[in-house]
Every structure is written in C-alpha cells, then in structure tokens.
Length: 417
Image 1 (cartoon, rainbow, N blue to C red):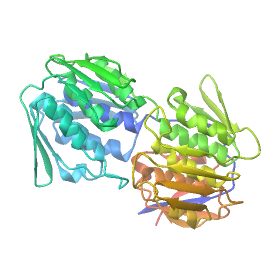
Image 2: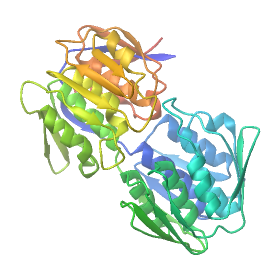
Image 3: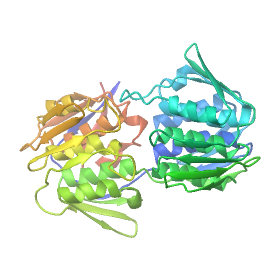
Image 4: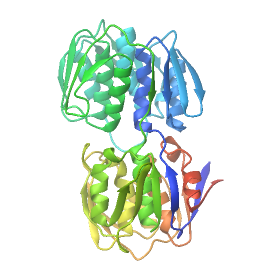
C-alpha cells in the first residue's frame, strides 16, 4: 500500500499541464468496439481506470498497441462477456453493453463496481435499450442482454443520466433507423464521445443539448481522435492555486467546460484570466469568501468538484453550504477534513462549512476518487504533515498528481505505507 505525505504551507507557482480526460476516455475506449477497423486515440491519460479498460477490451477481443499518450485499438474477434474481476473495480465497464449489443446482439456484463458514492442504477440504461429491442435478464450477478438488429426509437430519460446517454449514443450509432434521446445529459465528455463517433462515420446531431438525434449507419470506420483535456483535474489545479495563495498557469485547460465551477470560484475571490496556452489563476484579493453551492448536471456546478471546493471553503472567510443533489453518499470526505481541523456540519444532503484560521496536518484516509483530491488540497495548506492513505482511489483519475504538484512547489511525496 502507498500513501502521500504532504508538508503544507507552500504556495504553488509555475505551469501545470492538464492530462486527457478520464471521463471522456473511458466511453471512447469502449466505443472502439463498434468499429471493425483500427482507431487511434491520442491524449490518453495514464490512469488505473484506463489500464483496466484496456484489459477489458483485450478480454473482449481487441488488439491493443500502446505508446505514451497514444493507443491503437483493433477489434479482432469480439466475445460478449465482461467479467466481474474487471467490472467490479470500475463502474464505467457497463458502457460496453451498448457497443456489444450493437455489434454482436449479445452482452454478458457483470454488475458494476467502482467508487461507493451512490446507487448509480443501471436500470435507466436497460429500459432505454429495451426500447430499441434488447431483452435483459439478471443471472449469477451478470446482466445478460440479447437482441436482433437494434431498432431506432424515441427515448426520454427520467433524468439526464450521463452513462445512459453514452450507452445509447453508442448503441444507436449502428441501429436501424433514427433514435432520438430526450432529456439527454449535456456533459462535455458526452460531446467528446459524439465527436469521436462522428469521426468514425456516425450520424449524430444535437450533442451538447438535451435532445440528441442519431441516424444509424451500417458500419463505422477507422479514425484518429484526440481526447479532450480533463476538466475535473483542471478544476482541482485551479483550486490548488487559490488555496495555497499561489499563481498557476493551468495549461490545456478546457475553460469552456468549467463555467459552472468558475462562476462559483469568482464569487469566492479567485481570479482567472485566459491566456494563449491555458488559464492563469491566483487570488483576486487576500481573502477567500464562503458561498452557497448546489451540485447540478452540466452546465451547473459539477458534483465531481464538490469535495475540492469544500476544502477551499475550509480556508474561506464566513460560512457556506454545499447541497449535493447528484449522489446521495458523497460526503464521506467530511470526517477526514474534520480530522484536519475543518468545521463542517452535515444536515441531510447539505454540508455547512465554516472557514477556520488554519488546518492542521494529520493522517487521513481517502474514501473515493474526488475525496482523495480534497484531502490533498487540504494537506497543501495544513500546518505540519498530512498523510493521505488509500491513494489507489486517486490513481483511478489523476495522472501522477504528486509529480505535477511537486514541479510547481508543493512538498508532496508518494511513499510505501
């Protein structure tokens, strides 16, 4: 087991680069199953979840050639089973349902695992795919799907599900006829997936809006595609600059995808300025100010930035609140922040945060991916030494974060527990 050891109190200065997006790369990797030719992906982040996805693709019958930041994927002889040994570690594995049904008419996918931050039921995926002609059963912990040629359909989601929208985008690309997705999720990663599918020959319009239209085609072809930068990693670095009272140029920052976050940070006293190569970030004034936040689907405030902004609020003047509307179990980092001296009270789905004069280093334990980031941020400003354990969560979504932060002035090291 490894942990991060952080000596707090060092302002960050310099340039820090954003890696490719985990949440865009995962569905794009699985969408390569839809093509019988080689697809070449660039700006692929080196993350635990990405490695798991490559293992899954190989088990499903793909040939993988990897170099730094690049992957060539060739589906050779596909088989329909995504086993529990891989799926249990990564919820995104359920996104192979749509591609496998579209290509093979069959999919046997173990019920997914991943971060324990909420139910994230897959029933919305299944109901939508049933509208296209698929039939499902649950057997020995597996979702077993069968279908003939998928048929286009009009599908209205109960709420804007990101995974459901992605699964249906992929399945509908090879379906017969036209599929219309209503109340579709609008996240930038869905737009990136749609652009990748279009690069392979799919006919898609409306991506980035709540109504997406997909006209099915007979087959998709080879392409080369660059994955978008990771907006959550970028947001984490922006907060790191503000918390440590430093100044960072966040290179390759997808600013257009961060409006919901940047509006909140501006209210809190964070200054940002777009430059040719990225986003310049520093405090606008000496003090940061608490505010009230509600997590919402894109383009609202992202749930994946909730934990990081909570750490920022611990350093702010006054009291603020965070109302978590997306996942019902996403406050597990609160007690760990309290161990560092934070003043946080929970009331149902709302956290009330009062700024403190300082945080104090202590051993803490990460409970999920974004909680890991929040504890690192707190450790960067805490007096003394902070040890963050269970950083295997962190490695699912942040590429060499300790190296990136060290390069801009943080005292942070990865050591064996």
